Structures are given as structure tokens and as C-alpha cells.
Image (cartoon, rainbow over all chains, first blue to last red; front, side, top):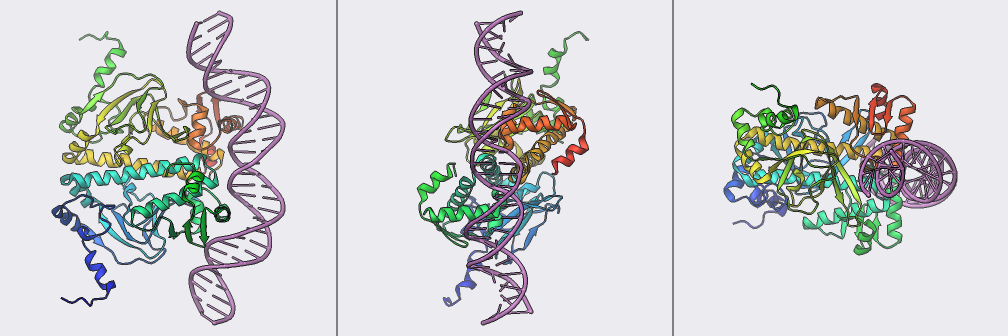
Length: 245
Length: 245
DNA sequence: CAAAAATAATGATTTAGATCAATTTATATA
DNA sequence: TATATAAATTGATCTAAATCATTATTTTTG
């Protein structure tokens, strides 16, 4: 055997099937056995790396596929008739994106990469058919959508009656939790979205986002170096958030 | 045949099976054939009229059932650790409620009647099993959740960057559309929720809700008589909403 | 690598809607 | 049917965050 293959050439190989994917437990394939995973494997279209700003699916287009995020990050947003954009979510490795097109058969939002990103593309019709015979897969799809609803209800709560400080603190803590569950550092991470995008998502102006970051930096809660964030005082930040993450 | 049976005694009889239910097309049973409907019928527990303020399911409780609303109206809300309530949705006949408990197995919000209300209770495990053999039913469940996600994303957009006037106008127009699709009058309806509940849902104080109602009344957009609303100028109201319903 | 463009930080000013307060109207209850 | 309680309206005041404006920093690109 040749052990001299460069790492970057090995990586795609060991990750090319669901059963070897390290995102297994987060993604579709949770708790499926080997045979079931092979069936799932057969309907997956593994994509190559997509550049920053790449549009995976456009609002108004036909709903056909869902996407499993492998590396990088993604934003979803709706564009109003006046042309202004509302970000509806940020997504990270292991997330399954695009299921909300089922109802109307039309994509209700645009899916766009925030940085270099790799995804697996799943044809929805085939996924649905497969789910008839794989109860665990069926349950996983429902769980994903259920979680999405809960996330959005959590956002409603945040937007309806929380201050700028509470929104930002909650935003950072939720990111922290999500990174943690993916095996990334929960206390030190890089924001792949701009201040403007954070503000848009949280219903704040970009100036307010910037000001709150500065304030939290000065008060010693976090360390802000442009897009690099380090949570210094977790408990006080949680207190500041004043909400469940 | 006896044609002298009072109407209130007939109604429960002709509505006791899904295939005779006038909410058919909105609810679970959309496009199922007679045999399929009979199967669905077997797992449904039809309830009697519930009084105003009745709690169907409490936040934190075990997730076991979903509810199909037959008559009346319902609100769902989350309660934070500090005890304040955030309304996440209002529901009307034909709506299917409670699917967001699937992810964690725990009810993420409380489901409460806003007035005298009747519902059908469906055991989720049985519903899921049945959906394996009934593709249309499976699709209907996914559609319901997908629609819920879209609704909430629409709310995010509303809360993130719309004025009080836009929020209220959009709220009224969405109600109008929902009543219309249920065969009720789209221009004249009774609000089953209080100003306080509307404000909570829309991220506004009850005073602002009241003021906007008064303003819209004075400007001739709507007619407000306490809980009775009549939309007088639909187009101008849509213009005021400045958003898709 | 320098110039241009985009993004972020910070200060000054404005404002929409919250909060506080009082009154009116509607609903529940004895 | 009167009384108590809750809900809604309306006015006065306050404030958090938006907007406008400038400067600094970062990123892109020729």
C-alpha cells in the first residue's frame, strides 16, 4: 500500500460515501445501517468545492433538490418585490438545507455560499421514495424540518422583544453551540458573514452590530478582531443573552 | 326520513369521518381516496368542544400527538425561563398543529384555544407508520411542515425590518387570505385574539396595535369595532403592507 | 504592491415606538 | 342588572436604535 498520497488527495476518497462521512450523526444518515446507507449513497450527487457567493438554488426556481452541507457555510434569504433581501438562516457542516420548498414546489428562498463550500445534492423525489422503506430516514427528514421550525420560532422570540445586546449575545452563543456540536472550537471562531448580514438577520443596522461588538469587547465579554471572535466570559455572555440558546 | 333533526345534532354526524369533513382539502386528508381515508380515520381521536383558554398541550411535555383544528381558533406560544410568553402562531380550521415536537420528542410550545374550539387528535407514531404506505399522506405531512417554515420565515422578514403599520396591515391581509381559503368572508371577520396577543405576536406593544388600528380606521382603510374588523380599502391596505402575503 | 472598492468603526442627530398614566369601553360575575 | 374586572383607547414623555456622516481598516484587483 502506498502511504505517500498527499492528505488533500485522500480526503475526498475517505469522505465519498455517507458511511465514512464524519458528519454522519448530524446529517441524513444518522443511525442508518450499512445497507441503508448504501441506498442513500446511490441518490446522492457529491459536488466539488463551490466558490464564495455561489448560488445553489434561486428563489422562485423549481424545487427539486435538498443540500447537505459538508464544508464551508451558507446563507439562505428571501428577496422581496422591492428587491431587499432578508436572511432567513446561516448554515454549517452537517446541516440539511432546502426542505421548505416542498409545500409549493417552488424554492421560497435563495441558497448562497458565504465562503468556499462543498455540498452533497439530494434529489428530493428519490429521497422521499427511499424514506417510505427507511423509517429512520423518514424520521430524520421530519426531525430536520421540525428543528428548522423550532429554530425559526426561537428567532421570532428574539426579534419580537429582545434588545440589540440580547440579540447579538444570543447569536454568538448559538453559533458557539453549533460549532461545538460539530467538533469545532466553541469559544474561538471566525464569522463567515459580514456585519451587514448579521444585522439583516437580527433585525439591526450594521452600525448597531458593530457598536455592540465594540461594547462587548470593551466590557471583556468577547474578543473581536474583525471576523475572528473569541468568547472570553461565557457565563456573563449567557447572562447578557437572557434567553435560551 | 326524518328532516326534523335539529341542525346542531346533525353536524357532528356528517363530520365524524374525514371523508365527509369539509376541511378535507386543507387538512391531512387531501387527495386521499376512500380506502386511504378510512385508514386515516382509524387513528383519529375526535374531541368534543373545548372551552376558551383550554391547553391542548403544554411546553416541555412529551410529544405524542398532533392536532387538526376543526372549528374555533388556537394560539401557540413559548414561555421563557423568565416566564414571559412569545406567541409563535395563530391557527384556524383546517390547520394541523404540533408537528414541531418531532425533533426533540418534547413539545416546544404550549397550544391553547382562543375561543370554544373543536379538534381532531392524531397519534403521531401511528400517523408516521401510516405515512410509509400512503405517499400522499407522507407528502401532506411534509407540506404542512414546509408551509410552517415558510410562514415563520415570512414572520422573520416582518419582524426584522417592517414598521408597525406594515406589520399590522400584513397581519390583517394574511388573516383575510386564510379566512378566504377556508370559505369565510375575507373582508369582514372577528379577531379571536386580544390587542395584547396581536402585539406580542408582531413584536409591538398593545398600545401601538391599538393606535395603528385607530389610524387605519380614521384613514378609511379598515373599519374597527372592537374585535370586529372590516377591510374597506383592500388595495390601499396591500400598498400599506408593502410585503407579500 | 499600490490603488480602488468594500467593509467596519465611531460620532452626532433623529425618530418610531416603548413606557407610563389616565380614561373609556367591554366582559365576567355575583 | 349592577358591580367588578379586564381590555382597549388615547395622550405625554422617554429611549433604544435607526439614520446620516466621517474616518479607518480590510479586501480586492489591475
